[in-house]
Length: 409
Image 1 (cartoon, rainbow, N blue to C red):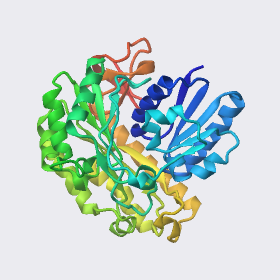
Image 2 (image 1 turned 90 degrees about the vertical axis):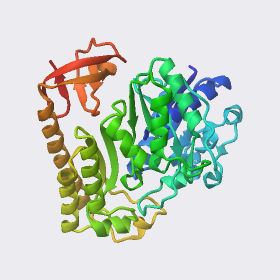
Image 3 (image 1 turned 30 degrees about the vertical axis):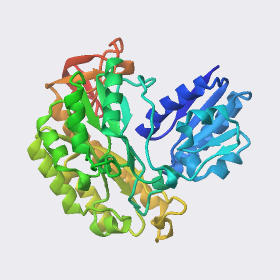
Image 4 (image 1 turned 135 degrees about the vertical axis):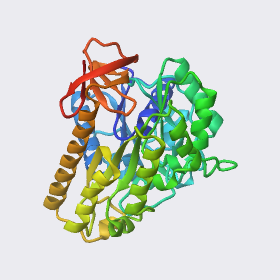
């Protein structure tokens, strides 16, 4: 056995796991599993700890190294687990020299990180779409969020480096690239001239004409710049799908979350983009049961699904993260949180079914993935024959759907 990586959480971690895989192998490590953790919710941390215990039972002689956001924010707890051999911080995991050392805890001050220095990778193991980290960290301090303490302050990869990474992946056969980060709409704030995300998008599309699809991960609509909106309206290779960091539909809750937009801002943004790109499909993150949320406040979040025209909904039952301001606010009971999350998910299911109904009989361009699954330009999942080759672009008509995915004719 060489080096295996168990990745939890976001696309940022997926990209970074490839760097770890290469550096750890180059360092000559063997019989090692690296667990790249997530800390966005307490459930994510619990799942990581559970997976570590299972690994030790199944692989008693294997070295287990824990890294990622949970390791960064709670290094001592993971180091105290008898199953864990090493704990490595988020900045340290991307340094080749880390994997030649054996200190028990290698976790530095993430807030001291000032730049991104990622080596170019040419593959993302197990993925048809490639993820490129263009930004890391966050300068904002939403009251529910632990991630800035796991990722540090916002810093961006220079545009030429991003273009070079995208070009390398395309040369290696990737047809779709997803730009990812913690807060990608803050891209460029620490770079000379402070270029914004829209400028980066346009440069990628101009300088890598062979790239068939460019997609954005979650964005903060209040930070969307004019070039980004222009690209959405004009660049057909920029996919008509945006996932929005909305979090709530009630203005007072948004203020208590320390978000920088109000309900009307989110609705206006969706209306504006839909005028520029009529076929745009929106996804969104919404938290159910944030502290002090009343029944009326929750109803406004529920109604936001229709008012923004969301299709792909990510629902997060509120999870108090230790050390965040929201942890000290008056909490909503667990039963109510579960019920509100259930209702939001049902609302999201209804919205997705409406979208799928509208796609039946249409013909779309589908990028095939593993196991007979593909994705349309709108990120809608499609069920294909299991024998369909992976990583090809097909023109597909849809005969129906099962409520979750389209079914190819």
